Amino acid sequence: GTRSSSSRLPSSLSYAQEADDPNARPSTAAAATAYPPPAPGRTTTGGSDKDDLQQSISSARAILEARTDEISTLRSSQAEQLTKISELTANLAKSHAGAAAASNDDVKNNLIESQADLAQDLGTVTKLISEVTDVGTKLREVEVLRMEAVAALEDAESIAATATATAADAANEIAVVQDAAEKVLEEDLDAVEAIIYGSGEATAEAAIQIAKLADWKLDGVCATGRVYNHPSIGDGDVIVTSALTNPGSAKEGEIVVTESGSQYMLGKPQLNAGGQMGTANGSFEPLVVVDDVDIDSPSYFAVPTLDLGLAKSKLDLTGEAVGNGRYLLAGSPIISKHGRSEIWSAYRANGYGLPKGEPLCVKLSTNMEAMSREDGNYRAVTRNKKGRFVKHFEFIPALSSGNKAALIMERGTGDLKGFVEQIGALEGGLLRDAVTAAVQCVEAIHNADLVWTDLKAENFVVVEERGGTVGFRGIDLESAMPKESNPVDYSPEACPPEFASAFLENGGQAFILDTSYDIWSLGTLIYELATGEALFEGMNPMEITKTLPTYQPGEDVFNAIPDKKLADLVRQCMQVDPRARPSIGQIAKHPYLPQGFDYSSLFRRGFGQ
Image (cartoon, rainbow, N blue to C red; front, side, top):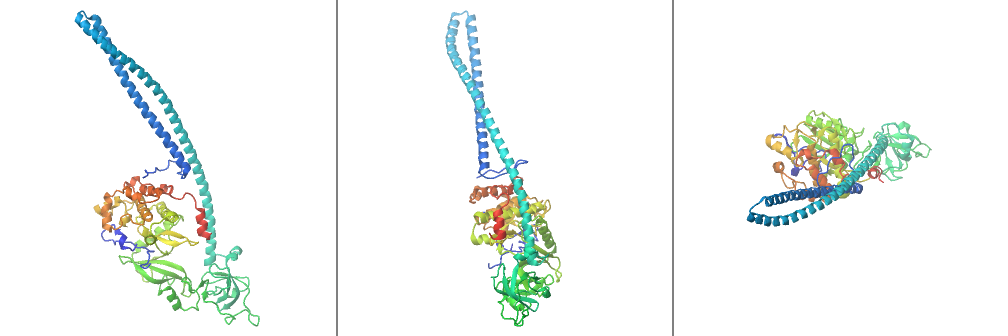
């Protein structure tokens, strides 16, 4: 990140206070007990059916405990009464024996009086014996009720086990369907990319979907004509393509490919008065449109006839390039606080050195070791295509200048922290999508046996998904390290209490990283998304670090989150004891998060429906 309000401190005193954020937004510009881990072989399910089963089991257990307590009380009372009966009976027997043996009349009289008292006690004994009999009867009745409670509990647990097994079968079926759907989607996207970038041969089916050029003519190595079936230009508009890779193949019915990768199906050509195919002196002037996109759009310049100065003015190009001219830098860079990294906007260059395509992010740094580590981390976490990270296009380990490396990545419209500051606390589906993106990123990192150590709002960017919806992507993996290794730096607002203690004690360099580190960070991130404020809002980095070792999140923290299921998730993540925090696999099954494959989201984003 590049914000002074949430600086990153180093694990040693020589580190800078903040790491690089390749997509930091320009200066202009979220009262339950711990949910247990699922039992081996079972799948945690959500919904009212599970809640009903759990309530039935809890009720049966409560009844069983009450009956057991009642039996214990009755047995204790019965034992006390039997003891008293024994004592009174013994005293009565002694009195009778004494009276029979006595010879003195006074002693006999005293004993007779004592016998009267004992006779009264005997009446008490008789009453106690009756009560003991009643207690015994009630004890047997309660034993019957207890057995009924045991049977009810066994029935409830049996039903729950059956429901869990059914849910597991359903989850397996969903997984199979999901894999099949993802495979189909990936194949479809590969086909689209092949059309857009010209990789592979265009099939007849693909040709139906590509733009068609009618009433066309050649203008040197470019083609001018009226375009139809174009995804962003109106039917009948006149365009000029970029240079054709093979101008000699341009004839009616053929598919031509431009050097920028676009493809067009050629219709009838424009003919001049002599019946020949039109040339540069044809009958109409083209609109100022080049290779798919209106010149007023800041996303495409691709014909040699355009002046580079026009491109520079439209896109704020600096005139500098990296990667042997493949990427053209634009605008002004964001400089990291330690001064070793620059974050640029950039465009790909076509064969004529002009910009094309959507803007990218280029991170330049003199810290070769950190850049190489970040490149490797991106490759590791995106290998299974599960995490939601920015696209990682290329790593250039040594530029022509010799003292910098470059990472070429997808560019967002701004970071998530700035997005929350602008619109306030996230709600509903937007909040759920942001939390899901964060969970999926952490899951991908932990599956790669890495610990992120820098999970915070600044390290997610906002992107526009296909179909115009808002999405979120993870960035900045420079400080991600292997599990059980040592950290290279840290962000106070993202570190757990146990690391803050180690940092204050010895700088934290010997601290052993565990995945529980990121789980705490996830809890603080979700709190910020759901409430609109950071957990330690208003505190500077050192104040946060000194607060954490003794910090105990109170109920006010969790009560500030409107959604109670989400509050429960945050509560689990922010356990002070790292051993009590759930794994990311358990978190992924939490009732707040969507379970299974979201087909509606896939089609809405992928196809604009």
